[in-house]
Length: 206
Image (tube, rainbow, N blue to C red):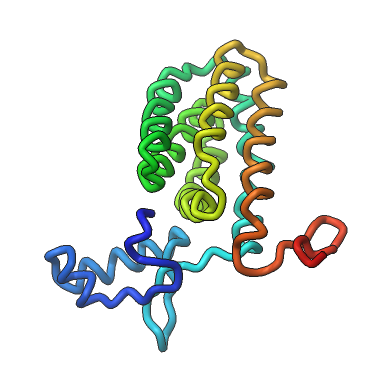
């Protein structure tokens, strides 16, 4: 998340172990776990490497988020969920953004979004969205390297949270969906690979 290991960089078990002061065995297990969460790719011949997040993969993750997360948060608002944790985490997002710390801001951003949808009342929906969090965080920090828009996004977060706390389900859902789709639209051109629109025309080809 900090960029210390760049996209596509090979992760040699012995070297990572020496860096962290551990043996190769826990490193091997950690790499398998990271591969399962979509942050690392594993190859029989090349070993482990930091995942390269191309436009197609990023758009797929954000498309699923745009479908599921606004609905989950809408349900949380309808149920009268307590968003105190989201309010507290938001300060961490803004602190990281203000300091220009993309990794800190991205991790806090992940916690903020989870605090919004955690009270939706459907544990399976929460589990699915949780499964996207690592990839979404990697996309976020990569995207901020392309288009450093975290300060503007902090304002969007505040508007979403204010709507949720006021009980305005329609506004919360609308603002959150726009927040998600606007971000991927801003960064898709800067990612490797071509993004395809619903009409089948590749964006960026013109």
